[in-house]
Length: 265
Image: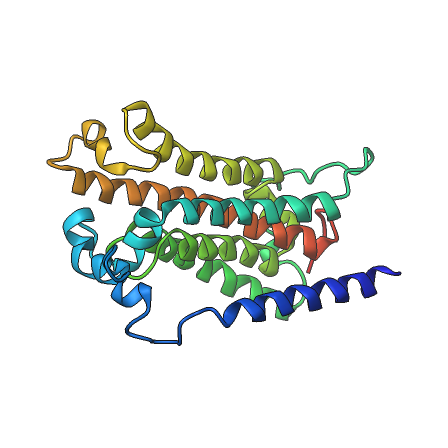
């Protein structure tokens, strides 16, 4: 049995199991479902608690961020780990690590490949040079303000990764790697996860549960655990942004160059 047939069978079986499980779900929008109405004689509705109590408990007006980065912080942390694992998988599969394949050297300070080539390349390169700093500034705003307005680490990280991809599109992959090299983006991807995990481990050292941000008021010197949770959510968003940015660019660099880390699109 070849690989395609095995993969097809696996997909069909998995899809059938998932479809079978859907039958046990409540109807979409059902007001009596446990998520909306709680459990009869038991816990109240999680949705109503988040809506009514989120700002009181976290001082974060963005309900989405408070749920993702606090109430279900475990899930979001491991989503970030999944992104990191995806980047590692692509690296393991595609990266060509031949001993005679040296890493790209940084460009000389006087050399600018954004404007090398024909007129179309000059237009694209110049447009990218104008757009890149604007994209990066807005991305930093999205990360820093994500717990107060729409945004956050995933969105800001994608935009930061896209800005480095624009460098490659406006010049070549060597230009982008000179600014965010292979060693650097792998370290940043790991650092992002470590930052997130640190916000979980420190509360444990202080005698509380993993990711129980409220106890960090002793470190942040806030006037209550609510503001400590708010500041901690900003910290974990920064960690998420570093990982997403680095892995997004790593995936592009490997896929566009077939693991050679040179040339590209």
